[in-house]
Image 1 (cartoon, rainbow over the protein chains, first blue to last red):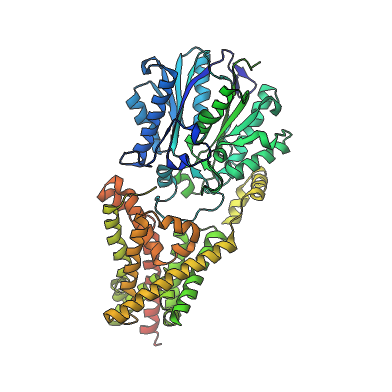
Image 2 (cartoon, chains in turn brown, orange, green; image 1 turned 180 degrees about the horizontal axis):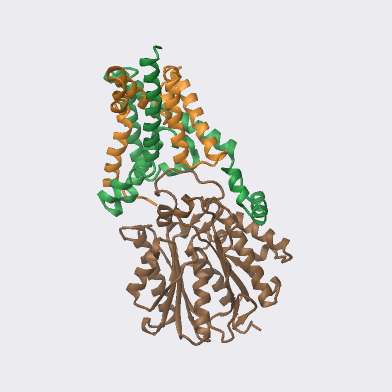
Amino acid sequence: MLQGHQSWIFENRPSILSTGTVGGPFEAKGKIPEAFDILHEDMWINQDSWEKAQQKMLEEAIQTTLKKGRIEKEKVEFLIAGDLINQMTPTSFAASTSSIPFLGTFSACATSMESLALAASIINAKGANYILCAASSHNAATEKQFRYPTEYGGQKPPTSQWTVTGAGCALVTQNGAGPSITSATIGKVADMGMTDPFNMGGAMAIAAADTIEAHFRDMQIDPSYYDLIITGDLGHVGREVSLDLLHDRNIPIDAEKYVDCGIAIYREDQPVLAGGSGAACSAIVTYGHFLQEVMKGNLKRILVAATGSLHSTLSIQQKDPIPCIAHAVSIEARGEHI
Amino acid sequence: MIFFWAFVVGGLICVIGQIMFDVFKLSPAHTLSILVIAGAVLDGIGWYEPLIDFAGAGATVPITSFGNSLVHGAMQEAEKHGLIGVVTGMFEVTSAGISAAIIFGVIGAIIFKPKG
Amino acid sequence: MGDKKKQKLQPNQQQYQAFQQKREIKRPIFKNCIKAFLIGGLICLIGQLISTFYIYQFNFTEKTAGNPTVATLIFITMLLTGFGVYDRIAQFAGAGSAVPVTGFGNAVISSAIEYRSEGFILGVGSNMLKLAGPVIVYGVFSAFIVALIKTILTQWGGF
């Protein structure tokens, strides 16, 4: 299973049986509304706090995934999920209502791919038959915790990003009918001494480049192997920085083949500045959009490198730099893998 | 004419704030604190009152006036009671801004829900 | 401070930051300043209109009209904040809507509304001044120092 220094190859071909995605009103107006199974008109989702609204969306994503996969909840061995809110309460509370044995994961916005990689490796080792992995975020809950009250008038610079409101979930199983998870690369934490919390794309770009480089080195392949290389939430700034970094390291990726979930999710005329972000961003766009393209046959092999910025409000106040991470998972259409 | 100068002077104080945001990359809280301190110091050297006479609301509406009126309250009391007055008179003139913000803050919390 | 921070960085970190900075979307400083000037000026103009109204309708003087003007502006701010408009104005205006007292009001009111979910005492009460607190604290402290120096100079210095 271990390949190279920091990658796993999944010989038993764990596959994604079904997915569930939930979004908010702002996402409904975005570029890919068809990527969502459920879209809400109201940010509150009939709850009395933003955090509960996030929990509700995660519960709905889990239920939708189970329904689409025609699997009863009792058959699922583990739930691997996480989010960005203090001590991950929305995820823990959702895990409590779903009563599936639960592993909490935190890699900030890279949580989606950390969960997927762990799920695939447990399934590959026959440690389980069905594992749900999920990530969620809520724009207002994140604003409240990391930035300012939602109604506060603070001008955001053009490098800042818009946290996605939503949740994305995938059901991973033994050699099933869906697309296969073929390999994964676990990233190192990169700290470039960046301190601006309003430029996370610029801080995370190095982590994305490091992990993508490590993936090609460990797997002994080059970028032409993939139809698309997808980053989590680098936005316009981070995408350009990471693409140029990879070029400098002699890993030339076609600009058209290098896409970012944070750019793919919203339209250009929405006021998102550098693009979308948040734990739900990579989960929703990967599961709701790119995975569907793989199933339709439009894409054969994709590499998803979700990026996360591992700071807290406390660490920013105390002038600590922003450490960043990226985890990459390779997903291939049935019969396409070597 | 006072309307014209209110617009120009008020606008220019905001431009100073914007430069502190964008050029020095200060947070709103840092910027506003520095402006309040600047207002207090300007009043201390006697420059702020003439500016109010000249620009009216252009000088009283920006947050700098908060520092100015704090100093004024303190000085009024100091004239009557000496050094003790500096402490006790502080809020004599300024109370409107703070009390209005607190009162309307609580009312706002009762009647509004954040829109997100 | 800035130099001290830079010195602590490793060469590869410095190199990356320079690399990154070249690709960063720059803040449109000139455009932002124009917008701040227009909106900030407009808010002060409205303040002047309100203050003139108080002077002619309610017999306030130039000096005493300041307080009701500020209170009225903060009342308007409450409505704009509650209906979710103030944060949109602010994204356009930047310091233009942050520097006038309406920005101070918005900081207090938005915190009060946001923390309502944590209750009235520990939510609204404790967090209301979270953003605006520094302005009060350093306003009061700097005014104390200034007034202290002035008092000492005038009362004992014989000026």
